[in-house]
Image (cartoon, rainbow, N blue to C red; front, side):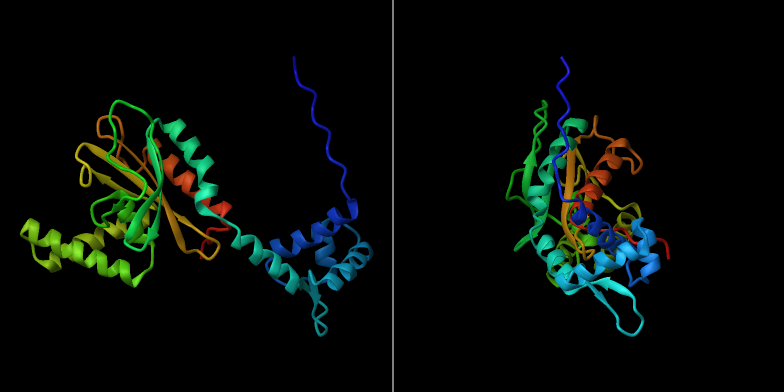
Length: 267
């Protein structure tokens, strides 16, 4: 038997109408003349003006006395900053990680930058026959893990550069190559990751395990986390254009949007 649809809750229409003006100002990105603002909000200019008077009194809107243009006010800024301050990447990531784990059928994780480097803070295991040696609290290497490479490519930190340099030197000594060659190789790898928008690793951190990791950005465009998925090489495709890579990219983009990030448009 089909459940009856829930009735819309009663609200205050005048607040919703005023909200359209605020939405129009926010979407436009700059101060607007009354006629343009009213048109964008879908109402007559006289009606828009009445609402703007009240919004100005509340500090949600301000008007430039010289040009007459309207823009978001100081209280709108306070509200926006308060909302952004309440955004928690780990909390918001949980349903996205759960959905990704279910769709891929592979282990997924969320990592953030901690005191010692790229640190796993949330882990969801798919429960398959092969267990990935990873747990919450694990600090991942920058040069050899997909998660670490994502941070190396997109996160900006002097400390990260120091840690990466240590790993590059160790790899150069282990492989019998020069430090300059090892640096060039890493620079090329990170450049490719930035072009693809996602990092990958194949058996370099865990033998027999492939991994992809995509960066998550906040409202300022700063990387704040990485969404990673891992799986056995035979079942987990490592192609840049694989369905797995696309799903991880999308999950990271979804979380970024929840955190207020908007991708820059074409130059």
